[in-house]
Length: 182
Image (tube, rainbow, N blue to C red):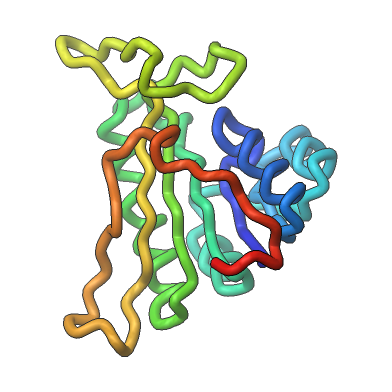
């Protein structure tokens, strides 16, 4: 399976990309910098240079793949608008993926670990303490959403999540070999 991954050198992606490759999948990772490109290459992934602001590039990469795993986010927006800005930047990205994948039945998995400190040296789990954000705790291991774009068999043609708000560690399963049924 050809998988396009954003955030492939980040907190979650640096675990996901090697597992996909070890299972026999062909991975293309989005790289903003030479350092990220080198890290993706070291994992054995193909490199696609670009960033999350290049919606046409994301659409092209999604269309050229058999599925997308989106675990990147716009960290550069945190100092200027906090999580609201980061979340707002995700909407056009998700809409671009939706447009590129509409009618294809290709999976889109979007997950994040932004609630994690990233300092654990391992993937966060639901047993790890939540990070405080103001008066409310944030989930320590982010969220995971698996989404299929609309198809001709969809009665409403609407897009929607199949699961969301689940800790990544609860939704993660071992990634099987490329030849295993999906």
